[in-house]
Amino acid sequence: MRVRPGKGPLKRSTIRGYQTRIRLFCDFLTDPRYGWQAECLARFGDAPQQICHDWNTISHLLDHEGDPGRRALTFDELERFFDAADARVEAIVRARRKGALAALRNAQMFKTIYAFGLRRSECIGLDVADLRSNPVAPGFGSFGAVYVRHGKGSRGTGPKRRTVLTLPEFDWVVDGLTHWVDQGRPRVVGDWETDILWPTERRTRIGGRYWTDPVL
Image 1 (tube, one colour):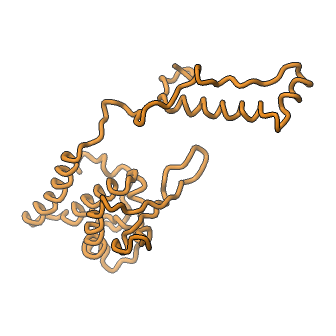
Image 2 (image 1 turned 30 degrees about the vertical axis):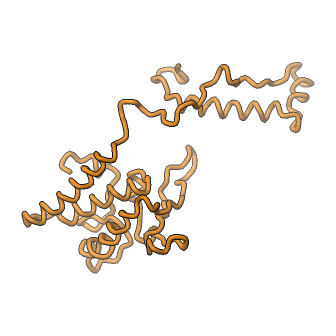
Image 3 (image 1 turned 90 degrees about the vertical axis):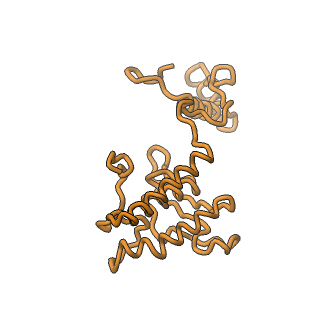
């Protein structure tokens, strides 16, 4: 199914979104409370009708509509991935090479993305002030929630902000964040005043294409 000439076929979720907008607009036109049908019938001799029905639109039948070739990692695969990220820090320290702090930062970023369900841009945009306490879960201290300021917004709007709470199932992320904020990050920023949560060795914010670097 092609919606735009010269473009490839759109995703089913995108087409369904277009159809939903048309359906809602037609609902507005045909709602007798607004009087559009009577007005159009008097002016043009014809009245608007609903054109999007269950039999000619795409239904939402699956919980996941992503590319079947891109599956989510299993828990065992995630554990091996996080273990490998932690082992890289230890290997750099044993070899007495530079980059241990960067490896520690990267490992914690991966865990934070997973634990809070963040996008890459949302994670790199975090500041220390975005780490919040949750009065319902005081045991998490200053890491009971993450305030996302750079969330993906709808087309034509700005960033969508939201707060993501720390879940008990992912309480292990608290220890990693505590270690990074209290010990790792201060060694990177030194006496430089910045609120960036994941600073680079040059004390700047990580760029959006950081993890696409083949050297990483």
